[in-house]
Amino acid sequence: MNKLKILIASSEAVPFAKTGGLADVAGALPKALKKLGHDVRVILPKYRMVTSDKPLRKVVKSLSIPVGDAEEKAVIKMVAHNQVPFYFVCNNRYFDREGLYGTSAGDYPDNDQRFTFFCRAALKMLKEIDFQPDIIHCNDWQTGLIPVYLSTIFKEDPFFKDCGVLFTVHNLGYQGNFPASSLKVTGLPKDLFSIDGLEFYKQVSFLKGGLLFSQTINTVSHTYSKEIQTEEFGHGLDGVLRERASDLSGVINGIDYDEWNPAIDTDISQNYTPDTLSDKEKNKESLLKEQGLDFKKGVPLMGIVGRLAGQKGFDILSEIIGRLVRYKLQIILLGTGEEIYHRFFTRQALKYPEKFVLNLTYNNALAHKIYAGSDFFLMPSLYEPCGLGQLISFKYGTVPIVRKTGGLADTVFEFNRKEGTGNGFLFENYSSEELLTAIKQALKVYSKKHLFKKLVLNGMNQDFSWEHSANEYLKLYLKAIIKKKGK
Image (cartoon, rainbow, N blue to C red; front, side, top):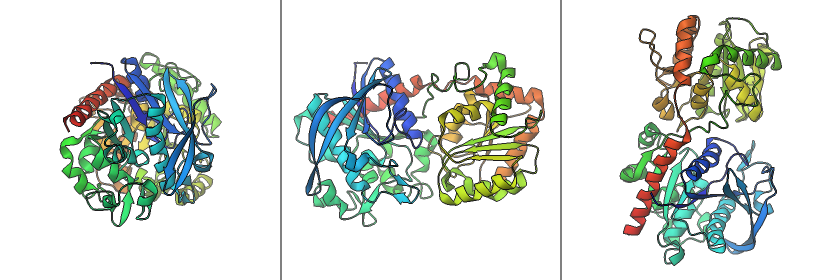
């Protein structure tokens, strides 16, 4: 394959800014593509939270970006991470804020302006630094206007003549829907406010723009790519996705094993491998002590790391937590999210201090310790486009308990006690009773040491490295480029 010039446009990327799995992908995929010999670069907003161990270097002093009737100034800075250039669109009015997209009180009301500005600045920057990409890889609604601009305002621009676009949906539930008046903010033609354009239930949808105007589309698992074409999981866009079914595919996310590997992890108290599995328990002892829980031999620890939201299954978990703590187990939860779950689980932690510990924060080091120290990892999601938690938990010898949906259905397979096959526990229907049944099945296997060890090793010996996923993305890039050149 010829060396490709690739721009990855994302609203977040590790290690600079993160709210979810998108950041992990936008941080790890470029590294894998670089290793495969491609010229890959990343662009994201310069939020307040962005920090770097190396100084950001100014590469474009000033760009004038139209936002509605106004002109806003953008400065572009850059730093190399894993030998990949990361560009930052700087504008304090739009990005020097507490959160990336909003606060606990809700989304920022001017997100239409913020990400219109980001999309237009990304395209203008490419011409300014003379980086002519073969492909722009857009991610989620925040970059959804880029393919729209390339098909309208920049349609006749020779600089972008052969530039294809892949649009990746990490979570269809987040759509970037704004009032009809936002079309003026984008500067796009009025005739795009139609059912065949960006109009979505009398609003303007940035996500719909990405779905309609990109050459190829993918989600982050095969099952999720099928689920979103149904009314149940399509969030009103299932019809659009069915029409584009031939251009829609699924690619499972990889894991960066330089970051997530118990053999070399510097955040955990004791490194271990499948050959030194007994050392894993030292991490459990250390974690429990740190979290104020007593270590008791033979008592399993269940870890939960994730966004506290109904989509992640915290509603059905909350229905059974009072029954769950009666079993011989302990639970540690790490995450932030919806206020209703903050309040509920705070009460539970006060009620059951010997069984349940809550950490309402984002703490990467603690996440590593929970993966390493837990026996089970819980992901009872209503839907899960890919899920990284279960892939990380496999590597750390921590057995996932999940609902059979999206990427969870593609990667977690029920443990068969007789044959010794499978790598976790699943339940199908979204109900607290089925979740509890799956947990009870897991506890039964935990009590059989030889069976549980077999189950743990089944997970640890799998390979979800990024190289395979990166090669799948390269196929989609080529498909997009060919399709663009064919028009």
